[in-house]
Every structure is written in structure tokens, then in C-alpha cells.
Amino acid sequence: MPSVFLSKDTFNQLKRVARLQLPSVRHTHVLEALARAVGQSNFAALASKLAAPERSGQCLFVFSYEDMRRRLSELGYPDAMQWSIDLSGASDVFRTAPVMASSLAALQADGILTAKQRDRLLTCLSAQKTILVTGAVRAGKSLVFHALLNEMAIRSPQHEFALSQVAHDGSSHQPNVTRYVRDECWPGGIPHVGQRRLAVDDLQENNLLKALLSWSRFRGGIGTLHATSVDSALALLVRVLGVRGFNYVREGVDVLVHMENSGSPRVAEIIERDDLMRHIAALTSPPDQVATASLQSASAKGDRPRPDNDSMMLSIAGTTHHLLHGAERDILLQAAFARICAIDAEGEGVPFVDAKFDGGNR
Image 1 (cartoon, rainbow, N blue to C red):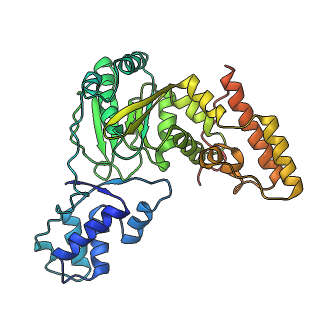
Image 2 (image 1 turned 180 degrees about the vertical axis):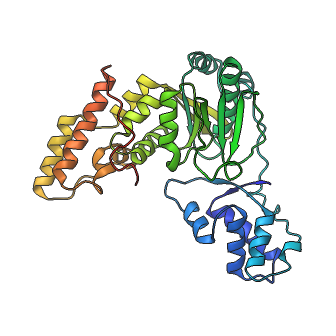
Image 3 (image 1 turned 135 degrees about the horizontal axis):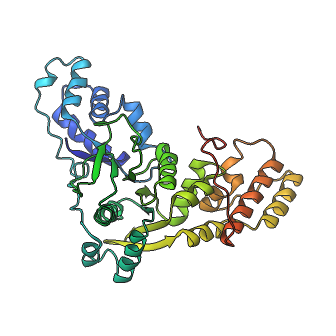
């Protein structure tokens, strides 16, 4: 089955091609059939997924013509199972997946990383560090992901790896890497991987916690996360994981590799754990300033100041005020979080917390 890349815009292209091929089918039925073709229960479910606020880019789906025909048959077109349907004319949807590089040397030869960055990543691999690759659409996250996974598997033949993907992408790996494709082997999320090292291409909000917990117990995993900047990646992690999300990131991620694409993909930043924690601390206000400014605002009953998007997401007030009652409680939590960041940046330990964190099932 082919893979398709869908956003609001590319879905409109797919819809137009489908309507041209199916002139006798009602518009609403075309939408329902396309939704079923990409594994969604109905068009409303697909529209919701494409409109998800955290998804500014494209989603990867497996496209099934058979499921599309079956849905049309259910909707009152009995001959649909015999129809010849070819939607490959929607070229932005049915894109050919890039050839995956098999090594960091190949990435260096393609100009995606420098010799210094390659050496730094090889050092991380030798230490079996867990790596999170972030970037926007077409930034090259998957290229770097597969090259790093291949290097990991070669360097640790005694370890088993579990590769979790949304769809087949043409990549190939060592014998100690087992691939799991969504909807083929399990209904969604991340399969049970036991004591294997976990690799997840395209992490989603509903499987972030499971991935981080796996990485905290079995080091040397890898994943990709859609984020346009390092700040937005950290903001997303803390927003999804709740007040104590900082601890999960600290325990689960050793290295963050951020990708950018200004004509061609490249490694823009490599941030290791200590610098990553300092990066989070730098995005929060000192606790005394947070408490003083916020208490003055609360006592005056005026409008609370609104920081910019990423700073807001990384502040406890920004991430929890809808869940917690009272401005004062927000203030204390924000100050505590800023203090946690400051403590860890100074080298002191922060205890790892249980998975049953506040608001964990939002």
C-alpha cells in the first residue's frame, strides 16, 4: 500500500482528483471514502487529525484503495469493488519517499552534517545515549533518524531494537532491528517492546510518555518529533507531559538534534543533556521574579501578562492555569518549576517522578 502525506491543503488536492475520477459519487461520500482509505473511521475523524493544533505540518498515512472501494460499496455503490481508481495524479500527496542514508558518513557526504557534528554524534552513539531528532516538515528528521538507528544497531549487535513507524518508508536496517508499522501489527501508539531499545519515527502526543519512560529504563533509543524550533519542541514536551514534564525529558533524553531546511536539510543544533536543561532554565523567569510579578498582577486583579508562545508553554502558569484553581497556586507552581530548572542547571539532582503525574490523562 502506498504512503500519503496529508495536510489540509494536500487533502484538497486529493479530493479534487478523486471527484474527477468519481463523477457519479456524492461529494460527502467521496470524503468518507477517502477518510476510510487512510485508516480513519469517518471524515470528521480525519478532519480533526489534520486540524490538530500541534500539527502545523503534514501527517503520514498508509493509503488503501481496497478500503476506499469497500466504503463506497457500504455507501450505496454496489459496483465500487470493481472500479479502477488511481489517485496518483495528486503528486503532492503520493510523494516518493527519499532514499534513506545508511550511515553518518553518507549524511556528511550529502552536506547534511559537518565532520565535527559527525564526530560528536559518533561519541554519543558510543556512549549509548538516547537521541531526539526535531524539525519541521521536510527538514530531514527521518534521514538522520534512520542513519543514526543503523549506526546504533551496527555498534550494538548484542542489543535488539524495536522500530515503530506510521508507514513503510523504504528504509532497511540490520537484522537486530524489528519494524512495527501502525495498523499492520498493532492498533496504534507504541507496541510493547520489553527490554529492547526503542526507536520511534514521528512521535505523537499520545505516545510521548511511553517513549520517554522506555528510554529512561533502556538507554540508547531514538525518536523524531515535529517542531519548528528547539523552543517549540521543549514547549510541546512540557505541555503534553504536564507540570513535571521537565523530569521526564531530563530522565529520557540525552541529546536533542534539531534539523532545519533552507533549500536542503541540515543539522542545525546538537544539544546534550546539561545544555538542554540550561536551555529550559533560560526560558523561564527566576522564581523570585515570577512570584513577585505574578502576585502583584493577581492582587491588582488586572490582566495577567502574556509571554510569547514558547515562553508561555514552558511556564507553569501557561501550562496549568486551566487545570488548577486560584492565581496564587499558579504562582507557586511557576516559581517551583523555575526553581527546579535552576537547581538542575547548577548540577544538583532532581528526583524522577512516577508516571502518574498531575493531569496525565488529559
